Each structure stands twice: as C-alpha cells, then as structure tokens.
Image (cartoon, rainbow, N blue to C red):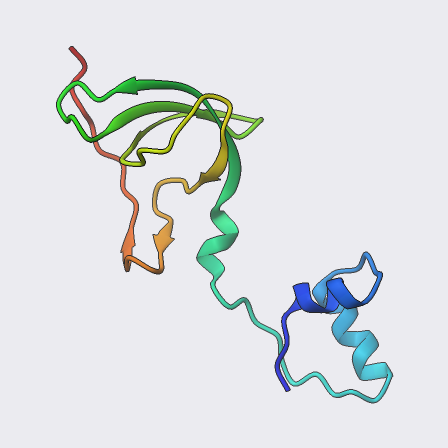
Length: 113
C-alpha cells in the first residue's frame, strides 16, 4: 500500500520525520519497504512575497518583480496577470525543474531602459 507522508500527518498527531515514522511503522509490524520523494524538485520551491511589480521594458505581457523569501530578495520576470503587491506565492530558484512544463528554469539577462 502506498500513502503520502502528508496523509499520515493529517490523520496522526506527530512531529517526527519520515525515517522515524518508517521505523515506528516497522516496529508496529507494518513493514515499510521504502519511502521516496514523489517530486524532489518541489523541495527547492519556497513561499515568497511580491514586494515590487514593474512592467518589463521589452515585453508587454511580462512583469519584472522583486520577491522576498524572508531570507533573500530576488528579481524575477513573470508572465502572470494576477499579481498584486504583498501577494504570497511560490518561488522556484534557478535550475529548478518544472515538472508540468518539463523544463529547468534558467537565469537570463534583460536590458533595463
């Protein structure tokens, strides 16, 4: 049987990591054959807050935004039309694999006017 770690956390009140829960389940007689990350690239993504939004100088449909993860600020180009200041959203750093689109994010330069 397969189930997610988050599902276990919803149904059981515990604050232990995946290795500890695996050992506990095995101790209870429920053999844990293995555990794996379903999509490891999602681990690189963090919640951020949109701090600034400016029009892209060379593209009408893009914005240049400053976002903060709370630890670091980043300047990103974004195509979303539903952005607003102080919005909380997901930030994926350079080299993050985007599974639905099947590509890696990469840093590129844009010209400021």
